[in-house]
Length: 128
Ligand SMILES: [Zn+2]
Image 1 (cartoon, rainbow, N blue to C red):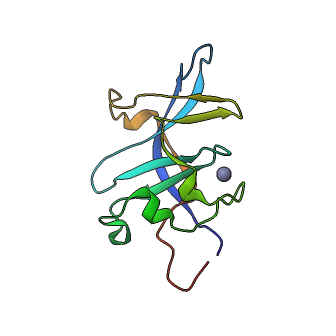
Image 2 (cartoon, helix red, strand yellow; image 1 turned 180 degrees about the vertical axis):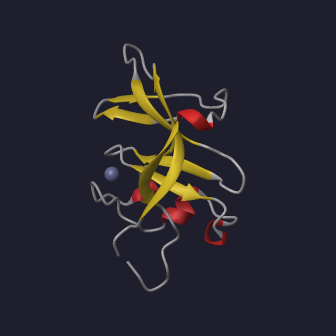
């Protein structure tokens, strides 16, 4: 089953995410009103995925449970074994990972834009 994309509003920041890595583009989902989206990354290829925690399907599930047996649409690994929270983990290249702490970032609606990411949802029984 082809993974669907979901558009979410993100704050875009250019940050120092690792030693010697500056102005690296970081996506921070805005949390406002009813939206509660978080991003996770495939540590094998760097693909980003959005998880919608307001979706009843994701209630009480861990990220690994949501991923289940889903394969990464970009590099084809079993995602549950290669997922990390983003931007706490940012895959910069094959041998380099960075990190950004988004806790201190304020919601600034005016600097945000709509970005589409693959949406990670629990796979339905009988599929995959
Ligand atoms: Zn991947």
